[in-house]
Every structure is written in C-alpha cells, then in structure tokens.
Image (cartoon, rainbow over all chains, first blue to last red):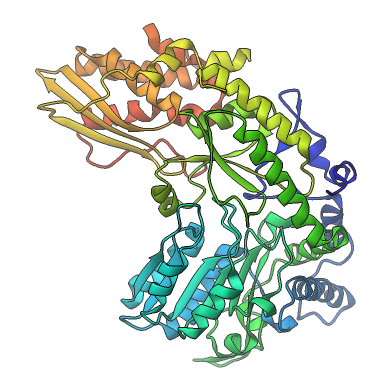
Length: 408
Length: 148
C-alpha cells in the first residue's frame, strides 16, 4: 500500500471538512483531486513563462513552447507511445474519440459498414460512433457482456464476423471496474480488418499503460482523472494513421500554407491542434505524470486493487448490499446498490458524513439496462484513499440503512 | 442526523415505501411524462378531469425517495380538487422549495428539501408533470436545468 498520510498531505482540498467531517473523496472515476505540485506547475507557468506557443520569436514564447512540448514528451513516455508525434493534445477522452470518429471515421466508413462497441462502454465511446453511423448509413453493433460483467468474447467474435471498420472498447469499465484484455481484443479486431479504439479514461490514471504492447490504433484518455486539470487529455495514435487522416479543426497552428481557396496542413500532431492550445493543461498533465511516476504506476494499481478488495469484503458483510462487476480483474471501482434505497438518497445521506460517492447511470445507460437497474452507487479509489475511507463509507451506509429500515 | 431527519421525514419514508395512487387511471383524459435525464428519475402521470375537477390521478415510474414520495403526496393532495386549486398547490409547493412559507398539510414535509439544493429537482418533478398534464403540454417535462 502507498503511504497515504504523505500522499494526502500533497492535496490541499483533502484538508477541508464537509459538514464537520473529514472529506472522504470516493468519486475518483469521475475526476481526481489535484496535488500541490500540479497546481504549482500551472501557477509557475503563468508567473514566469506565459506566451502563445509555436510562433513567437522572443524568449518567453520559446519557453512557453518548450513547456507545452515537454508535456507531450511526458505523455509519450507515460503510455509508451510510438513517438512524440503520436500524441495529440485534446480536451480529454470525449474529444479524442470524437476526433477519431470525425476524421478517421468519416474518411473510411462507408454506407453498409459496421462499427462495433461494447455494452459496457461509456456514452463517450458510444454516441460519437452512433453519430458517425447515422451520417454514413453504417450500422453500430453493441457486444454483450457476461453475467459477471466482462465483455462476452463469443459475442465479440460474432460481431467481428461482419468485418467492421472500427472496433471500440474500454480498457477499464467506469461502471463495473472490469479490466478488459485489451491486447487480445485488439488482436482480434485487427484479424477482422478493423482499427481498434481504446477508451483509456479509467486506465491511464490507475495502471501502467503500454500502447505499443496493446498495439491498438487509437488510445484516448483524460488528464483530469489523473491529477491534471480539467480540459487536459490526449489522443495517442499510430503515426501512419495520423499522417493519412484529414484535420479535425481548421484554424491557426494546424496549417502549413494558406492560399485564397485552400490550405496545406502542418505536420502531425500539430495538424490536429488548430487554434491556441491549452498550454496550462499540458503543463499540468506533465506535472501530474511526474507525480504518478514518482509513486510508480505498478504501486498505484496495487494500492487501488487492495482497496477494492477490502471495500468489497466489507460491503459484502452488509446483508442487503449487491456489488456489481467481476470478482477479479477489476480496478478500484466498486459499484453497488443497498436494498431498495435509491442511490441518490444514499449519496445525499453519505454526503452528510463527508463521504462523496457517485450515484446514477454513470453515463452507461445501455449497461444499466442490461444490469436491470436504473442507477447504482459507486465508490472509486485513488492514491490518497485508505482503509479509513472505506470504514467511513461503511459506517455512513449503515446509518442510511437505519434511516430507511433496510437490513444491515 | 437532524438535518437528514428533516429531509427524510417519516411521512416521506412512508410514501416512498408505500406510494399512494401508484397506478394508471382508467379513462384518464390528461397525461404527462416527467424525466430527469441526468439522474434518471422518471414519472408517468395520468389524470381524469371532469367539469374542472380532478376526479382521479395516478402515477408510475422510478426514482429516489424524494421524487417518489413527492409524487405520491401530490396525488393525494390534488385528488378531488379543482384544477385551479391544484395550480394553487403547485405554486405553494414551488414557493416552499424556493424559500417561501410551508405548503399546506402533509406537503410541508418537503420543507427540509430546501437545505439540499441538489434534491429540489427531485421534489418538484411530479408537480411539473401535473402542470404539464393540466395544461395539455405534450412534451415531457424536466426539472434539471442545463447547469445541473
């Protein structure tokens, strides 16, 4: 386990109280808190280096460009990208996937083609493909999940028989915590002639990602779930694919030359970064990566799995609690329901004890329909959480049970 | 637990557990759907109005204790009332949730919701559905603003 006392000391927000109670933040799958090193890096950038990037001939602009590009180098190393040029900065996972759907998808998907997603995907890895399919007259096929919350591999195989152009799936499910066999899924997708798109939003913050080992074509993630600011994130793509793809947004920065009636494009990845980029996001993301690498991603993953195991063990002791998702191969995401208490009521009651959990459909409505529930409660862990937080969760749950008269 | 006790009063817990008028209404001539997409609360409301009087009212759907109990207590409160009286109750309930005086009768049980701004939309979903039904607005109603 990580030394959570020293980790917690790095996060100013964790010192605040909620209704007179210690803040127990268990909504990390939604967004993480930010350590002082990230906040300081952003402030330092604005205090000393702020200018627009890639165009100024003066020292400040050169420094700003260096700071921005250092963020890219950090991301490339963090996920073991093929090259620095494989890293396109975006606002996060959603924009990364929309970029792929819009640029690669519109160029390559034809009427009658198939696109495959899974029933455990987040709306951000479903809706962009629905929009693409509707526009192109293509068909979206959703792969079923097994009873215990994994991708149904036999249905995945059946979906691939239609030779889809694109196969998209999550590395880690935000609603179930399932860690999917992404390298295997990618291999199968490639064998069927598809490109593989991995939604890495719940993976990059929590485990060691190696896009070259996965061999996926596109990998999307968000910085704000991994200590970096809101609006930070990236698309990692095989450089040959990026070279062949048309731009996503037209504007400054992404061009080589502009004539009256046409333009030529800048080199990758800049071709996809039209307009003034979010430099503070890149700086913050670089600082977040440095922080995580100092802890070690293997230790981060181990810490969260251990917390999930303890949480599942403790929650299972409450008679009316149902836990969703697989028993093994899972990350630090623990979805549950408690008797017939609606998850929103649970979230309100827990909040009174300073315990922040998520309640709702978690942007996975197709999955919720399959689970046969309108909503679940979800506790999700990160590096600053410890067993005391789980104790606080369990004791607040018992209070909710008392109030609603549900067996504890 | 005192403020939680204010929110989850016995009458609310009771109507959550045993919602009244949780059914369709035979011969209903007014209908509305309420749906809060972010939280997933859903209500389907049937009303039978004759000569300006609510002769029967029932609801179905799913949601949290606050939204279910609010719908249940609403149906009990407006049953047998004229549509003008029901509109008056709507205004009184809405005023209470936004800081005004308590609504009459058992509806006052929802005064505690004021202290939980995130839950106001749960308490008033059914009431907005009622107003839509009485005004024959065909579109489903929602009480989630874009800023939620």
